[in-house]
Each structure stands twice: as C-alpha cells, then as structure tokens.
Image (spheres, rainbow, N blue to C red):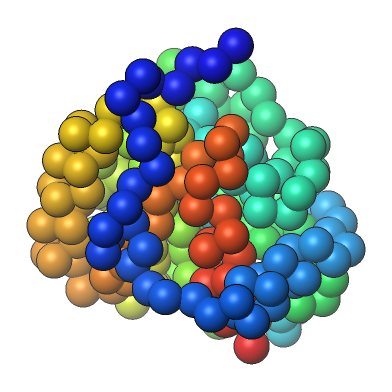
Length: 227
C-alpha cells in the first residue's frame, strides 16, 4: 500500500541538494556501500568496543527514528541492522565492518520514556563514553524523524556533542511521510537551530529509507570520509 502523502514531492532546491556530487562520487559511494558488509559485534560495555583504525560513522537518534532502516538502505541489505517495532530494543552499540573501508556504529536509541530508568542510565553512560573517546570517529549522524522535528532529548545529545567537539550532522528521516509544505518549514527550523551549535555540520540530509530518497547522496558523502 502506498502511504505517501498525496501532495508529497521529492524535495527540490538548494537545501534538498545541499552539495553537488559528481557522477564519479555517486558511483564511488555506491561501490563502497555495495561491498562486503558484516556485523562485527554488539558492545554492551566500553571494554567491548573494538579497537580499530578504520574511519567510523555513528548513527544516533531517538528510539524508532529509523536508524536500522537507514543502515539497511545504505548497504542495500534488508536485515543487516535488525529492525524492531518496539522502541528501545537496541541496547548496545552495534558495529558493522563495511569492507574494511568504513566502520558503522549503530547506537542505542535514546529518549524512550517507557524503558527502565537504570537501563536508560546504562545506555547513556555507554554512548557518552563511546562518543567522547573515539579518535577514529569521523562523524555522528543524528537522525530526526521529520514528522516530529527536534525534541529536547535531541538537543541534549547535540549539546553533549558540541562540548565534546564531535562533528555531527542532522539527517531527517521518513520524509515521504510529510507533506511538502511541512517539510520545507521543518528544514528552515532545523537550519536556524543548527546555527546555535558549534559542532553541527551545516548541511542537512533528507532521507526516506522506504522510498530510497537521499540514499545515493548520503553514500557519496560518507564515502568521502572513508577517503
């Protein structure tokens, strides 16, 4: 069933493109993410986080924001990162080796109020320790559900990343679920908020894992970091 809003159209204009990628860069991104990608391990504690030298990209966001779906879409797999309809199911940092070119870290979802408080504290300590002490971490992708926008829990993570001087980029997910006018308004709001954060990447990525919108551009951008 097609649940795309009737007046939805793939975003256009400067903020939709954000950066121009040559055909060579798009092809480079495709090849990087089409290569072998394997689940390495799930780290439930800081001591279990692998010691590697590969460029690393971390995916962060509220529970059920679509992190696993985006990882699967980027790599062209259906179940590389296991998806769950139960928010808060991912309770560890999951590492994926992308052909020894990039390490992907899928972080535990945050901001799920129904999770036990002690479990939330454990996740928070693990994620904070990982983000602040990972020298090879090139960028954190902070995923925001375009239907809901930036919430206070997102702002907490963004402020923490600012203080730790960890570069991060906002990725709007599920844009196929939002009407074009609402999406345009949201982009402006997010852009204005990013101006207040010193570690935020200035370019916002717009994605739909279901409709494969923005996936090629994200691959190309992340492949640049691998270089």
